[in-house]
Image (cartoon, rainbow, N blue to C red; front, side, top):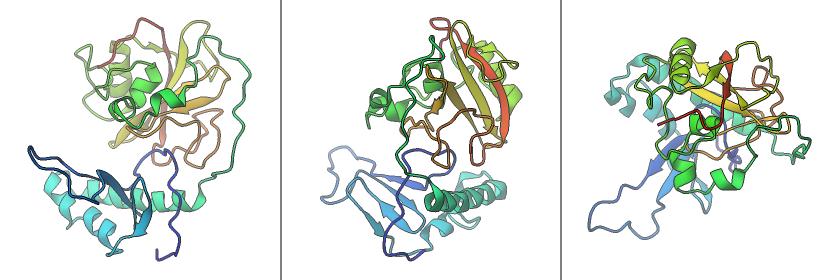
Length: 259
């Protein structure tokens, strides 16, 4: 962990991406000079928008994620700590193996009804990026609420399973397309649901050129998987800990409402 140069942070990957530390403003008090508004601790390094430096205690991240660390106060139990520790190790592997090479974005038009690939619009480092997640991006619906499947319809999922999240999406008017087999629909656009069992769900969407893009949480939208490769099929992409491919679905433009 003591390398002289910090590993580059990928723009967006699925799963754990380090510990996010944010300064919470108190009324009438300014942020101390020199203290960043937001920083991330990952693999023994502290990342800010300006630079990266080694953390003073290389064991800080492991201690926070351990069963005896602050995570125990969440009440999530030892399974959560064990999963967090596994995800931390996985992210160290991602940092060491992510392919940062430049990839030419294919311009062919295969899916004429699919949304445009507009990373500059989604990745504004502000309200759009931070307040819209994978479900917002997948449905191409900006709500600024970190939308949850089924919430707008009063039928939000009760557990992180394929069946529950899929049912919530159907309540929001997404159409089940289990046999789509990565083919573009004649109307609307194709999305794909995957799940990290008991941990999190994630959505991908198929673009006009036939390739897939996604937006992990409040991080930037990206056209790459966890290995840094373009995504031709979410079933075979590197999805990290999101091991369960659930289904393809279709978003009919103007039909869907998310919250």
